[in-house]
Length: 293
Image 1 (cartoon, rainbow, N blue to C red):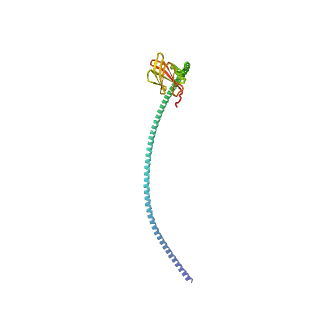
Image 2: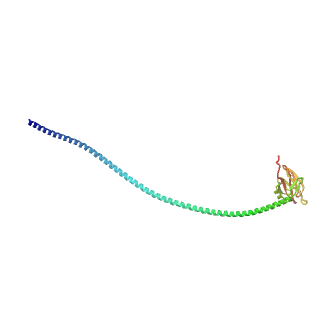
Image 3: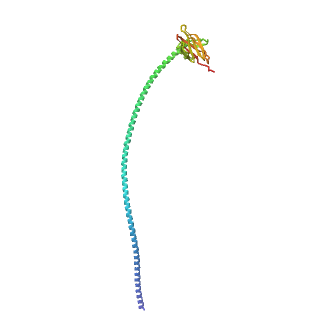
């Protein structure tokens, strides 16, 4: 029994080993199949990767070429811009030089014009100062002369006033041919001048020729009708207010009176010289007249 058990056990062990070997072989075959399948799948993936890698390499090559072309174009553009920049800098430097020269030339012209203008101004100022000095000297001389003249005039005025006072003292008031007290009577031009300075009446000198047409004297007209130079007598016609008044056989230095509308005092004339062909004298009229209504 023990032997049977030992045989059975040995048989069992043999089958066990076989089973293990077969199982190991199956497992090995399964593993190899799996590995083959995996290798096949990996091979396909490798092919795909190789194809993708080729495409990627082609794209990389294209990108590299494009990048190289862009780099070359960019480098060329940079070189062109650099050349343009240098040319522009040279042109700018030349333009700046020309502008500097032109500005310097213009500044020199302005400086010359300014110097010339200053010289002219200085000359004009010198001339004007000289003229002012000459004018001031002439003015001072003239002032001195005027002062001398004023002193002389004052002396003459004082002398004239004294003479006028003396003449006025010598003049007389007499009655006129109308019986009215006359003003002061002048017998010559100097005395008439004294009367004018006195300012009591208006005075108009006249020289009337014998037989002439009526002549206007003041605001009236007068004409000589007759002259007797030996007796110093004359006859005069006076025209005033559309009226004619005859003054007959009047004498030298005699106040001859007549009234004119609008006056309270009479007009009067005095003949100072009776010559064969003319009379010389003056007409005296009132200062104040009454306005006509």
